[in-house]
Image (cartoon, rainbow, N blue to C red; front, side, top):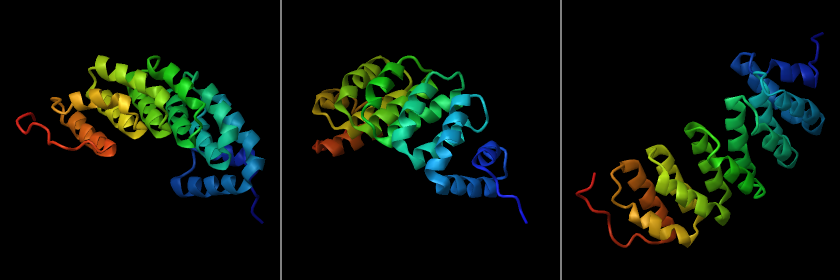
Length: 199
């Protein structure tokens, strides 16, 4: 008779099992539900284990409310993969308490993680992010950060951002212009096409 893995054993095999086995382990952990929470929280808190990011994903699927304080704590990790996963998941769980926490991290992170912060702020659709995203858009040279900020401002839908978004219709970067058009569509402001001479 085959040995049934404990929750701790299942968590230990995350990130080291072949993909089909990992999918089965994820499913088993989700089915374990609340019983798996303490082990998943410990795995996330270990921060440098290969399992921590995957444990965070499963934790969020089982109990988004219980995952919130664990994800906030993970933002202080030296593990960039875990920080990225925590930033992403804070946007996914939809808890508006994450907005000030994410805003605090907007300028503390490397550009690659700032992109995730901006994306999560857009997912949360909270007007408290408008000023910071607008400042970022005005100050940032990274085209990726700029078009992600435009996209986030469009998703938030706060009309205070509209003049800034409109001012970028003829931006030299086509990604920025594309996000501007999408944002203006969300605002119902697509009355005149952008200047076709600017590419």
